[in-house]
Length: 209
Image (cartoon, rainbow, N blue to C red; front, side):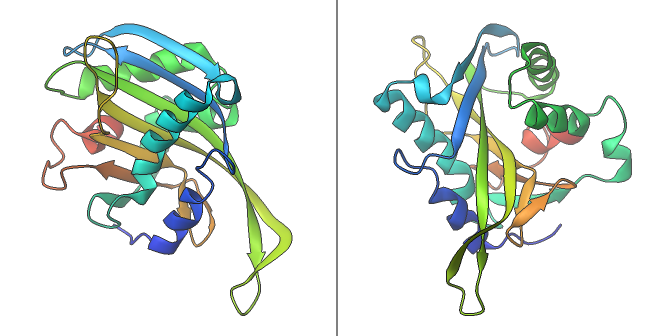
């Protein structure tokens, strides 16, 4: 397991504000406690009200802003994890389509719901973002030129009440990993609010087994 650079994560969170928003789409599903889908949504992020944008930005920001290498840990997809039909292949496809393919999202919700064990109803939130990574000068000041466009997904799993109001994220991930200020498609940064939760029934179990 590699180490996550805290500065990389903070650099991303600075683009998760109303004024500097990096997200263009949000999708998700409401799941019952048995992992079955109750309903789904898929919207252009900028078409949300300012209030709803802020609510969802706060949810998304929880993942990279969490305690690095304690709550948020880096995991590598091995060669066997990247085979056709894998969750990795599905995440790559969802990133490339910018969350615009509902059929692929439905496959993820079904796969995830069958493996993730929650104590009650919950929601799976997906956000697609893009970040023009600026070059850094030798003195670490940003230059105007963009080094690459980092396209990424943030997923957050939150408990919900009867009105589908989300609580604080229990787990989630950032994919591809943002490592050394660049995209690393063979790695994923996984968040679990309770770092002692373990693999069984958690986000790691759902993505790798």
